[in-house]
Amino acid sequence: MPLELPAHGRPWPELRDEMAAMRGNDLDWKHGRHGAYVWYASDELEDVLREAFGMFLVENGLGMRAFPSIARMENETLAMVRSLLHGDDETAGIFTSGGTESIFLGVLAMREWARHERPGIVRPEIVAPHSAHPALNKAAHLQGLTVRRVPVGPDFRADPAALEAAVNQNTIGMYASAPTYSLGMVDPIEALGPIAERHGLWLHVDACVGGILSPFVRDSGYAVPAFDFAIPGVSSISADLHKSGFAAKPASTVSFRTRELREFARYTFDDWPSGVYSSLTFTGTRPGGAIAAAWAAMNFLGQEGYREIAAASMRAKQKTIDGLAAIEGVKVHGAPPLYAFSWAASGVDMGAVAGAMARRGFMCGQTTSPAGIHFMATPVHEAAADAYAAAAAESIAEARSSGAVGKAAAYN
Image 1 (tube, one colour):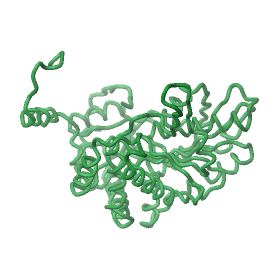
Image 2 (cartoon, helix red, strand yellow; image 1 turned 135 degrees about the horizontal axis):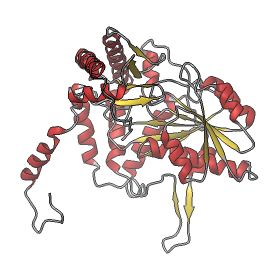
Image 3 (cartoon, one colour; image 1 turned 180 degrees about the vertical axis):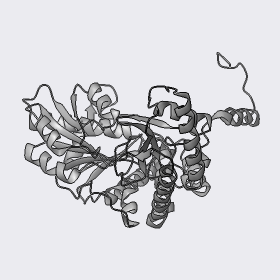
Image 4 (cartoon, helix red, strand yellow; image 1 turned 30 degrees about the vertical axis):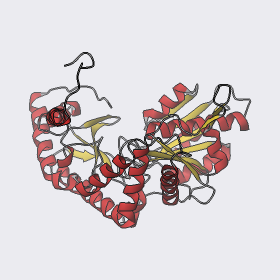
């Protein structure tokens, strides 16, 4: 392994072969051996993403005046997301690098809005269900806010009464998920919107996993609870393009009910030699290729393409669950309405099961509350469902017979 920059360059074919060899032990995502990290629909779409990204590889998303092509594609992509989330002409968005930045900007806008609307609060707090993504706490930590997590209900969804009971004189906002990353639950946002309005709070909906594809799951005949701007009281929504939008990384969005609310996410500074610096994103330089690839993905797929992906993802979910249900003692936690879920087997350490699954070539994320294995179904998982269930049955039997205890759950 080189410890310093080589004195002389090497030819690309040689480097390409070495890089290809490096992938030998990587996750086999094309054959559905993953439960997270990769959203893959087809080689055809992958080719579109690669070519679109490459066309704008050098362009900088910071310089919109220099690259009006990037500005157009970003604006049109944000408009398409706005329509999926039942926004209107006043709804405004920001193209970001991922869910963490989207949540960060949602929290930033929440904080600045509260400073404007409720300047007397000196120790601002956000109330959230225990199921909220850790990006919320990360954003709060970096911005001097406190998150008050409260237990979820027996259905593993946010408990509106418990959240309202946690509201106090320092509360500036609420947080909900559609769906939660770990268990795939859509929080009862129709009940949370009125609470936010009643107490004058900002309500952020984390739809990073579900925001883009959920409308097409609903169109395919599945019951998906409402979660977007159709609900009064929702102030902002994060929705990842590189997750259920099947775009190339890094690509996400955060949308605000009005342009006025979006302005609270803006940072402006002018005390330096180059004049006014004003930005809506946390990052400075942004890859133009990511914006171009997202625009290309949405236009290449269209509504019809996303419906096909949604239907295939839901078929993959159900086929996987059916295979798991045939194993004694296995159950799915709750009733997740989308393509994410978590399952567990009784009388066995799920960390040990996850380890045994890994030895059989399946990467498994774990959940802790309750203990289980997380699964995010995409179209590629439909063909892999039988093999997954077979590996699960063998892994459960191995863990039960050995009494092994696995590694603690980690999301990294």
